[in-house]
Image 1 (tube, helix red, strand yellow):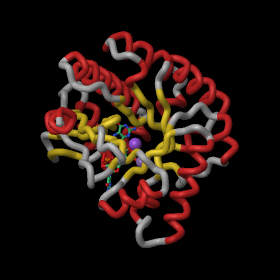
Image 2 (cartoon, helix red, strand yellow; image 1 turned 120 degrees about the horizontal axis):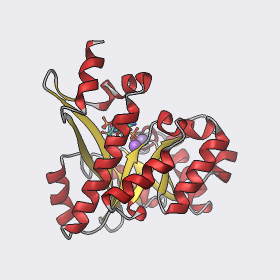
Image 3 (tube, protein in one colour; image 1 turned 30 degrees about the vertical axis):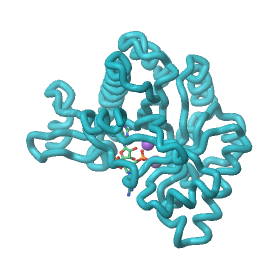
Image 4 (cartoon, protein in one colour; image 1 turned 90 degrees about the vertical axis):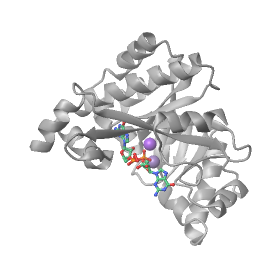
Length: 252
Ligand code: G
Ligand code: G
Ligand code: NA
Ligand code: MN
């Protein structure tokens, strides 16, 4: 309860921050995008990772104002980088199922893009497979509208959820993010390697981008490229870092 009260104050007290993790074209080394990941700079406990407060925020509904803050901030910063002359990148924002369940995400995204002046093509929303399985018709309609606006959609943690492939066939999605559990074991476990290969060919055959997350070693990166996966993210390239550190990477 005390944690909850402190978390409620986090937005008005300006204690939330975004860190940024680049996404790379593995072949060229070029930064093609960046994922915004929230942290809570709490005067009480220091820099708190989202794993420690996002579940509470989801339970209590605080994820709604927090999620809106993340969307606003990510779009505003990305527009500021473009205005400052940095090479343009797509910024990805994680959406909780609850933010979609509320039903006004399309209007919220429209408003934030208008307020920040960011073109829709530079925003991507990361959703998990569970979103596709809950209230399918409503999710389908909202994602279709977002995509019609030019916003991209990626499926996070792909391969770990419960969704059937029939959802994938009809859902408006641009990118599959191969879950890091498969990437972690790709060099040591034949089954993980086989699953990665299957996701890559499934995605490409459906005309989707496929990105591997959680790349920690050069060997994993090489194996991914050998298996046709050309986009990646992970500690090998960069941890999620504060804005100024990300901009140094973007400038290189
Ligand atoms: O680095 P990492 O500790 O950043 O993130 C831990 C978890 O928190 C991940 O599952 C990530 O998707 C989630 N997360 C990070 N930032 C956000 C955010 O802005 N919104 C939501 N809903 N989840 C986030
Ligand atoms: O659920 P989502 O995929 O958004 O969560 C991303 C999480 O994975 C974040 O906590 C982020 O810090 C973490 N992460 C990103 N790259 C790596 C990596 O290379 N290795 C590990 N172990 N975690 C990573
Ligand atoms: Na994510
Ligand atoms: Mn993920």
